[in-house]
Image (cartoon, rainbow, N blue to C red):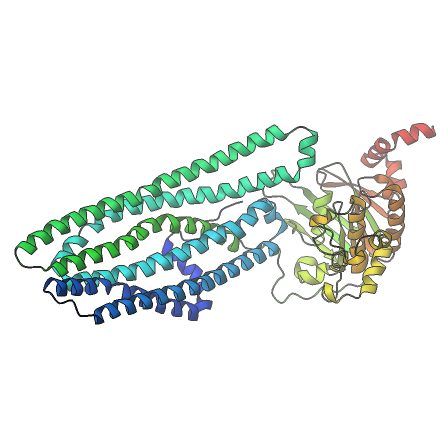
Length: 595
């Protein structure tokens, strides 16, 4: 997929985008969460002064100040309670944000142009929704837990250190800025590796799913070793990226440990010297060491924050690359609805070129399909039949020229009104993991699928010669047919797809060799039904088997994207061109037998 540089790569800019797009909707929850984070962090800084007081009192022989123990217990309970509420608010906040991101991302993908979907496999797109959004959520949680909570904890601890001994505090704090530069460099490296890893995961997932989906072919052609070898290479590549990230991430903790050790040794030396001079008490020493130990954990967490944030930023860039992709096939502002009268379909000098192809798939095709007539598209593989077919429901827009329905440019009317007047049956039946009834009912033009009367669904099934096999299913029309309808035979799946078109009852009917998956008996039934359905409707057929379109009103022959022949079956045979050649090739055995 083309990656457009529309997203500012700076962390602050990306987080700002996330806030503007989703975070501000949860302002109340964020404010409440911040309040409990502040309470948790503030009380954390009270431990050092409490330890100082207890040790100082014990060093002068005072041991009956039990109230300070009650204070310590109250501080612990308040800290634990604030942490509990904060963590629960975190779950609600970030699951809410990630859910909105996933919904919007999926909606954007569903609304995207068909050409856009051709750039990346479905598995890689699913990776954006699940794994990438998960990485963004993880980065946001780390940001709140570390960049906010831990920073506030450090501020509270530093305040207690300054309270105990400000001179000693400045000496201890002077060491930590040294760590900023190497940690920043590690973070940049982790971000680059994170982008590479996320991109690789999508491609690897697509190839793994491709292998599993083609298991029948793989076994028949003995491709198991090849698939295993390819998966080993892909997974090894991912492992290499993970090792690189892990090696860099591993540098952070030892670096922080060394710096922490330097600070503690320096503090011990300095405090020992001041104790001898009488400038500090044992309580100062105990409280200061307590504060340093309390600061150690959030400091290490901040050191590790860079890696998590960088992976989240890399994932967020991938998310925004999808969300920022402009849709090209859209309805114009205030576009009128398509008004159907006869159902004429006209191609005016229609040209279309795919972005990745050097030559146009269609070149200056002009053609009129009168309303209620039947047009068959014929040609060798790659001639442009499917491309021309797809221009009618605006799955693509012509790069030049126009497509009209009843003299209305279809790019000037609303998409929903155009597609509401079109029924489509493809060579490969597209079904969903739902009931038979639901799969037929989604073809309805008016109302929601669940509101379609059962009688209408049943009548559509009867028209498609599907009612009998549906009734024989375990739960009849309420039988769930599996992913892609995999619990049905190929012919059964195709008949459900045809039933959906019957239910739609649209004035324009697009058939991509709709009977190709049926046995001889069912094909005869469906062809008769489709002929009845075609009466009074504009029917455009992609024909692979010429026996199915000999009675078409017009046959358009395409070759290398150009319209080279047009006429009915008899006229094209008499012309003795490409159509006649294809016809003789398919019926050679029949013709020889007849001779």
